[in-house]
Image 1 (spheres, helix red, strand yellow):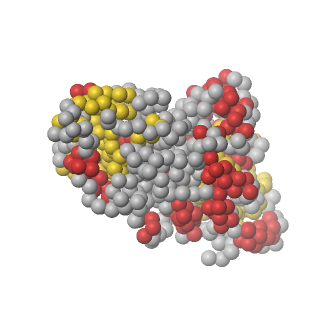
Image 2 (spheres, rainbow, N blue to C red):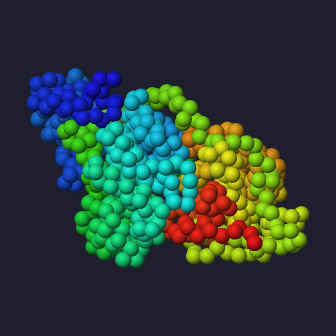
Image 3 (tube, rainbow, N blue to C red):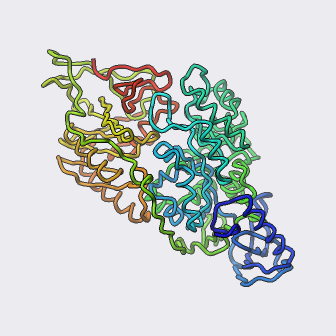
Length: 620
């Protein structure tokens, strides 16, 4: 790969060589590779349209932009698109590609047809699994020729709280990451607010060392201010130097955070309501706002879109198309300090171009990446590079032994025919856990399906000790006998979670998951009926999105045959049926309080108050 190869990693030497060539092209001293003429071009810096524009492209970058006929040089090829309007390649200010569940080379094939040509990868998912390889993983596809630009932000939440063990990143690691590559954009979402705020929290020093290291490289500290809605804490969060938040759920919350100086990244779940509410409040300067995908599975992208879906949502909510486009181009580029490369169709930037056939509805006709056609009519045009992922990407599930039903049993005290039990629900955000009296038979505390109480477990998949934390949860498990569901994707630590109606079914599900290197396993009536492989880090599969979607569809079909318990919870997206959202129910960031984590020295049974570190027996 040469220093100016457009399909390579951004380097200072490469930039210096390439930009001297761009000077020559812009002045007509050497030919451009292509000259693209379009009917209209959106200047995202001003929010204004330019008519009859030509774009000179060289080595995958823009060299010249001006009215048709103004380019002083020649081009090896001239392409006319007078009926199409050009906007810059769309960017993701905050996204977990891991939540697409396809590896980044297949992510490119999935999202580029939707106009998404660059992504700020919030890597606390992968970082919690293979922390030392964070940059190696995210930069490998680009080095192999993928047109998607990935700007990694190594995880701050490694581990997510001080009460969880395993992967560990601190300031020295962050300094190394930011030295190693200009593609590294900052520090991924700081989400352990109690640790940042409270000097006696055992994670306080680690987190501040990472924040300090990020500032030392003039990079961006991203935030996660879930549940922080009162003005004192909002002000304190902003005073900490954390630059953004993507967790606002209402217009009032978003407005308060904007007024505190935070860059607000709006997700689609309540995005329409937030945008409408900000318009009602008179917001005219949207430069401190972006649209963020955060988590979106590949099968959902195939149905409803990627960043283009976010843009259409914003337009439908009342934003002019020009402003909506700024929210996924220049605004996130400025915030992430990436404007030399992305965010505008201007000289020096990547020649990533979204060609629209209709502006008001944001209908995409073509997508160019690195100055070449990459998608047309929703179809990806380029080859997906074949990456031979090394063993560190594959071998991430290490339970250490085969588990048995006994590993999931909760022992009763001798002579007791009932025990008190701590019980949680999905998205249990109250100060205290629930307490239920449960029957004890044959020396073990039992589930109670009549009260929607089943067993939930977290299995340590990293240390090889076979450690299992188990307790009772309500309103989320299978009612059918000998049935269990497990997954190695469990935000944000990604130990294996399992919910089941029998201990034997839970053991079978987890053993199957471990044997296949991670993913989903459904056991129904004692038999494995569906699996979905996440063989890369237990989070992703190195296959096309369509193949993953087919496997997920089979899982959903099998899951629809199960009788699932259900009770409403605090989370608006928790609903009846197949409990896919359980993958998010073990988060330990704010506003969570009591939760179940893998057994540790601090919390041998795993039940811990993640804001204070208090522990409690699961049965007594």
